[in-house]
Image (cartoon, rainbow, N blue to C red; front, side, top):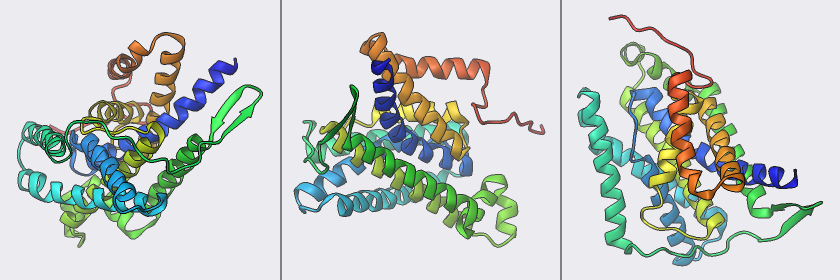
Amino acid sequence: MVEFFQQMINGISLGSIYALIALGYTMVYGIIRLINFAHGDIYMVGAFIGFFATTVLKLPFFPAFLMAMAGCAVLGMIIERIAYKPLRHAPTITLLITAIGVSFLLEYGMIWAMTPQPRAYPNLLPTYQFNFSGLIVSVQQLFILVVALVLMVLLHVLVQYTKAGKAMRAVSYDKEAAALMGINVDSVISYTFALGSALAGAAGLLVGVYYNRIDPLMGIMPGLKAFVAAVLGGIGIVPGAMVGGLLMGVAEALVSAFLSSTYRDAVAFAILIIILLIKPAGLLGKKTQEKV
């Protein structure tokens, strides 16, 4: 029983990171119906920005954390403006192929700039552990969970209760009607990319701190798993991305502990297939009908 709860804690820590990445997928999809497959690599760039900030600039955790979020926000806006905006009215398959191309550009651009060798992250947080009758919880796990929850709550408040959030929701429902009401649709889309990318950058730095290792290809599998988490919760639904990310992390931790770590990646895609067969709209999604 102790082992089960231990893995639940590990899974929640991992799942909170998946949730941060999944939020970027679900926000962009909710606005322009695009699966941004480059999003996992923006998370990787965030990890390297944090690495640069802490090793070269010698910044402590919080300034490096803000720098990673800001850098990724700018990168997200640049990608949207250069790669996606000119193709906004193109067929969906064109946008998907472009997203995959941007993903490769970020991966191999980082390999060219930083070499493919893994880098060891500096210790930015205390390594102290609490022992509750055999249940071990580290300060890092608590910190990652708290930071992720704070960011998710702030995002929810921003989307639901601010003017910018109302504009985002209006554009997600009907871009043409929102434009007629005076909303700058282009600015809202850029803002959405910046916000989602900033969350991915935060996740990248948290992963670097937690696992103490980063590399230019680190965004591939977490990016795919976060996409599965977004689909699991209901892509396009912000609370769904949070729920899906946490469930994905817990499932992966339990499978690794009680079956085999060999299956930890396979379980994500098994969950995707099951959800698409049973409830294609996701756990929090609703069926919609489109006029033909």
